[in-house]
Image (cartoon, rainbow, N blue to C red; front, side, top):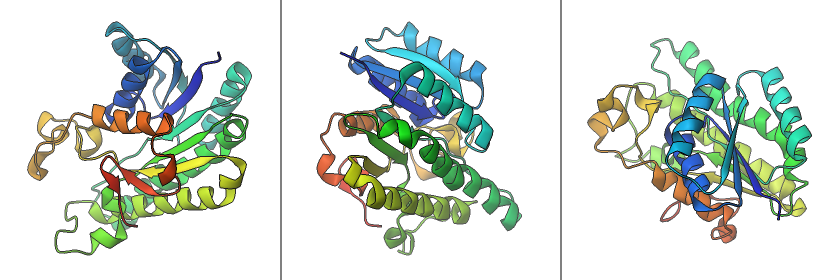
Length: 249
């Protein structure tokens, strides 16, 4: 039986790292490709996960979501080695607090929206060769327009660009679902929850949530990805999922 091949962007830390670890620990049938801007960081993360004792297998690949040539080369390498791809997890993302609005928006939208769209386009032909392909976009509840305008809407440095990017990423997913669902591709926008991450900064306080409260272990995000891949959320394909249900757009 051929392994279920999963490619995760930004897999060397945070949600991407935790997802790789959860999947690799769940079954010997998973092969996870850890796709990262820094191959050195990817290799270090791979070694850390393997040292914990896993059932599945891991490999690494260089992929910078802001560099089209890097994306195309990664897709070619995956095609040559595996011939197909079962799951694409578009996880790589950033926040930006630059005081200049144009700088802030351009940086965040390039990484959080344009990058995932290019990655999806490059790897989609491989996904469509799979028997039951999944395309998962790691979004955020902060990208919900319905919730953003409420009294408790997000208010932190860089929230304007970050929230806008996740709302736009949700649309990237929705359009993919509309066009490719007839070909068997199941697409999801997924909120990973409020988890420990370098996204807010690399200090312990920032990683653990800072002023926003205590963040959860990112393994909960990996477990949600696993449930999607196992088909437990198939009825929610094309929607904005979170561990306890669905978020409004």
